[in-house]
Image (cartoon, rainbow, N blue to C red; front, side):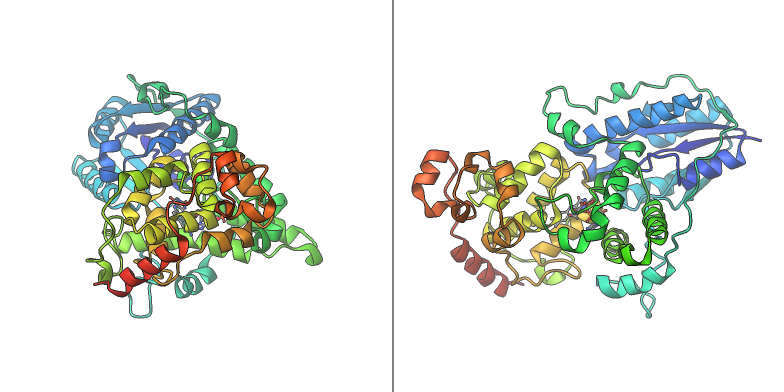
Length: 470
Ligand SMILES: Cc1cc2nc3c(=O)[nH]c(=O)nc-3n(C[C@H](O)[C@H](O)[C@H](O)COP(=O)(O)OP(=O)(O)OC[C@H]3O[C@@H](n4cnc5c(N)ncnc54)[C@H](O)[C@@H]3O)c2cc1C
């Protein structure tokens, strides 16, 4: 049996990894390879929080492989050159990887496949990141979907909760020289600002399964009731693990389905609302694959000439630092800065505030989240921003401007989320917490800023601007 290289990218797991399983089954020797080539990701090289995650996830994968007698061969440089050099060194006759769907990755991987095949090396790509390939779900007319509900109605009946691929046994690891330690990639920042990330997350395959277990043990039962409450752990928090491929949708589906079947009919959780939400991830990738211009251009062409306010760095800075004077917006932005994550409902509110009340282009928000989220994902982030800004496929209507005070009273009625992230308002009266500007004395005493815009007036200005669009 021959030797194969397996390129690990955002599939940093050994279980349910089709590229890894196939290579191990078909070859006597395998080399697990990570090539660090951020420039090959075009404008979307990983941001600071993602790099932190990647450092730890690669280290954990390396440790797992070492425990099995091998290691992760880490290299930096041009992927094709590195693969060619290692194929030569190890005598590999095949290269396997799981597909990615960002435009730059598709272009890179197509070149890689063609160049390797030309050289007589087999190149195999596999489906390991999504439930379904973006081209497998088609409308009756044979085109892509633009609206989620019909997309989901088409996809859902085809999804199987079959057991995922087990961790394969490995005959032998191929040896290669010049591998780097993960530290050499300098992904972890020199300045120590990542304490909050380390306190919140455990990157890697084991961390992903722990997170799934916590969710499956408890919150999945009340997902519909709790998923909108930012103070509660009502969602799975699997997004960074999914982004880095430490766990797959198939694994999650299988685990939740098996547990549901094992529980008595009376106590059986309804896992459908959660699966549907996970379906948005496949949908986001479906959209990105079919409409690759959307990370930078409005999905809806009617917004191509929309006049956003000029970029204002002071305004953006207050939003980024959580100093807008609107408690729910500031709490979300501070949660993001501290933990690298923000609750979905709060993401919608901070995005609506930026694009509508402040009328800043959604690009600015998308970029900031790209740098600060541990789950920054081009497909999901693009969909989220275009949805809220009203410029996207299946978007919130442009006239929907979230009122952050109403939202905060509804979804954080007791103010636990606000008090947690705005310690200066910890002692504020419950009635004032959502609108502290109503008591100038409170603002003076606490140092919490006055609102940077009047919510009603800025909403009206946004509606006027949207009404004039295109
Ligand atoms: C402005 C904005 C920006 C966003 N940026 C990102 C991003 O960069 N990366 C990211 O993963 N999600 C993004 N989202 C979607 C969503 O907020 C997160 O996926 C979710 O908060 C992650 O938490 P969770 O894992 O607990 O979600 P759960 O509710 O437990 O959902 C399970 C999984 O389903 C997927 N999912 C859930 N909601 C969505 C959605 N609306 N769109 C696409 N996939 C979804 C995620 O992979 C998530 O992990 C964004 C949303 C908005 C409004």
